[in-house]
Image 1 (cartoon, rainbow over the protein chains, first blue to last red):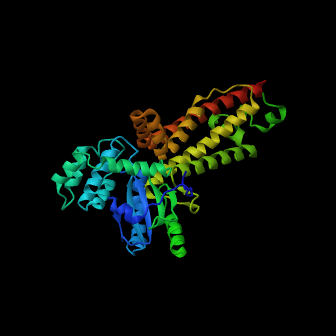
Image 2: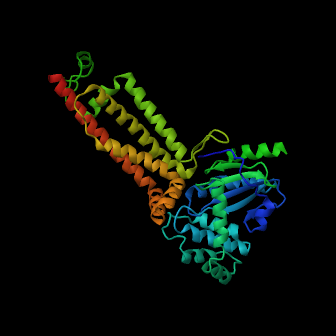
Image 3: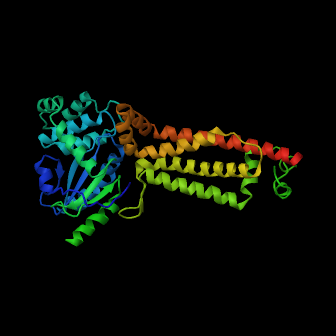
Length: 200
Length: 184
């Protein structure tokens, strides 16, 4: 399914709660609208979103303080996807999530081809300036965020998301959520965001 | 067996104009001299093209209806449309054969070609299938869906080869069938 209306059983996901729980986010904490993006670093449609749509959302809505983008993990594309998610969440400990996120997507290779093996993830992390690699390696080796990532997966599944990327666009207090599935173009997000902005 | 009226419409395979003409072209002319088969082919091709664009996440109906073609999807889009056109031609020719000839054309490549086309398109967006496979088959399912996702372009090329093969074998047998009918 490539677009769906929320059902009545959907729980609310306020922006401040997601941030407090440790979800990586981009933009202003007090932005009136939040986009929660459930993605997998091995998913090439997620890469399509990151390359084509996200920069336009960033430029138009995030930089202007209207939208905050929250990253949710849904590593279901391959066997190595979980390690990539764990590694990314480890970089968030040190405020380097988005650098690592962009680095992985710009180096994306075929699913489970070894490009996000633990060794390669450590190599990618070592390319990020200012990242304490020792702390990162310990975090990744100990699978510190396994339960955190699993909670993200459970959350995505509870919303009925089975594919990546999938999105929830909502008011930042968690109200009026709208679910979108697929690597949608900017115009699709614009339609939803502008509608929410004009609704106040 | 062709009816007398249909025999009159089709080119004489042994006539001077048809002599030396490839059975591929001859059978194409026979089938698509009738408007209804052009319609069959067009409907099949357009339907497949739309379905593959949906699965390739190029065509969206929600929240707005929009088609967009990012750079990374251009090759896949071209291959999918080549498949759509070939599928339209092959399906249409097979409908003609089944409606007009008692000779059964065994063309396994029609089935495998079109199945592979559909499968490779569906598996562009494989996470749904991947999730289904992984929940039913575990790690083996994830591996299988990853394989199909990774090899989407080769699978489409294989589909094109199989469809060309299906077209060749169908048109060859159709031309032979027409020759027999005409002689009889």
